[in-house]
Amino acid sequence: MNKNLTPLGHARVYRHPRTGELVVDTDSLRRTQFAGADLAGWDDDDIEGFDDDDLGYDDLGYDDFEGHDDDELGFLRRDPERRRGRKKRRLGRRRERISRRMGRKLDRIDRKEQKLEQTETRVEGMPSGWGATAVSDSETIDRAQGGSASLKIRLQHDFRATDITFTGSAPGALVHSIFFGDRSVWSSSDGIDAGVFAANGFMRGLLKGQSLKAGLDIIVNGSLPGPGRFTATLIGLKPTLGGC
Image (cartoon, rainbow, N blue to C red; front, side, top):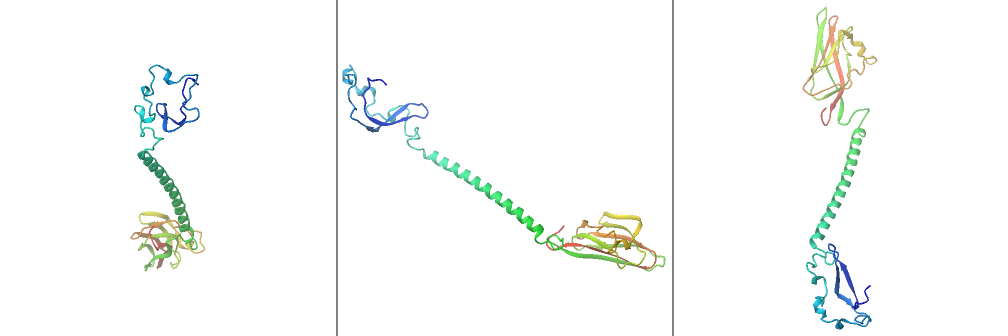
């Protein structure tokens, strides 16, 4: 430290954030017992032409430096605009966190509701919003030699098939094909005895998973060896709330 300096006391000293220059707050200057004392036997009066006012530091402060003012030294007096901007960004980040948190909660709620819809209203394997139903048709053949029969069932509602039976058909009745609209679900050129579709037959569940919209036709083709009745009954589900 240069010993040829006159101690003035203690004051707050700041560093400019951009230029790095030191700024002394003269309003906070506090003189001590050494303030103003001569060092090494000289004082400022001993220097020819020396005057305090010549340096321009008679009222030292950050306003005395060119280009320095309160607005540039943000740490002395905060800029309201910067403070508002910082607050706005902080609030924005908080809203984003809340939005993400609420989004995750809503996703969990949706998944729980979907699981409840799939499980809580199921009765004996029946999906929610659907009820059991049956549709049927029959045709009587009077010819002694029998012949072919074609049943057309016009659906009044959406339909999901689970099974089909030909109970009530004349003995020896054969089933040749089953159509859901224009879609062939099952066919056999030679035909299969309707008895295999009985309650204890191995063809049970043949139509499970097949579905058709309301207003379309289910067509069942068969034949009889003689006079008699050809009947088909389809068991399935119809919507109680919505559609297929």
